[in-house]
Image (cartoon, rainbow, N blue to C red; front, side, top):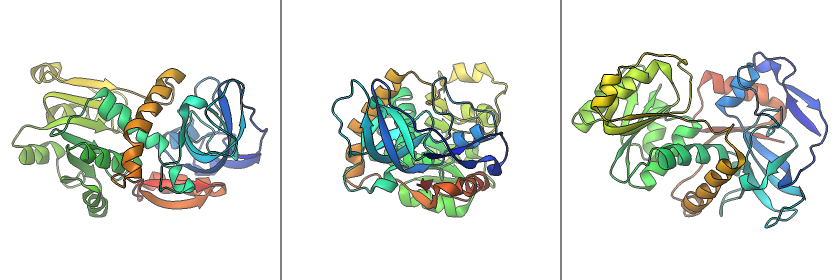
Length: 325
């Protein structure tokens, strides 16, 4: 088969289309013939040499895919060769075939085409696990999403609105903010021109956000705590603004707030399977019912993965960038 490989870390040009050995499904795995994958920020960081795959995972980038089951490994039941699926991966989505633990498989949601489904597993698992399973966002609460125009951001807006929360977003352009408004965002903040702490305080009467979903990290840590409501929960899932920062613990204690850090890729298989099962139970019906939809910016051939990475790094996209085999 062919896959996008990374012989040496570097810029987008480091991604090389090459012939590689076919994967063989092990116990509890299925072999998926990939139809499409999607580009995630983690793929960019892996290409740069800063985010190695977990032990035993495919060395090729790609944290999600869609396709058809080509073979079943020992001990697999409930699935059949030819089933159309999408899957959460620890790596290997940028390839013509990939092995997937059976607990990370999902059926293609009713009413959705196979290619578009490739952009669902990573964002739905990330948002549902962090905003709802970890931070326990409830109806009537306020969620602040940093990077509202991203794949994660566009999904977080829709899921939070679907459960009856109020949603604030930050983004770096009026166009991205308008797209977030179309998806249901109530409070729009241009982080290039506005201070999100001040703007959120104005709109909430000084209360702040009950939950913050943050991809920035160190750069926003202190200000995120300032923006939290009493009993608020800050969930950090990215480090685009750095790894280290000082924090006034007095402010955290006064608000009785929590700072939570999570990742998805390196979790044990059982934890991933539990998240995927929760996504299937809670999110898939919303997609089938038309209340939530994946936002796709554009679709490129897998061979043009380098161009897809350039698009992601330029941050001109809204939603997901997909790759097709």
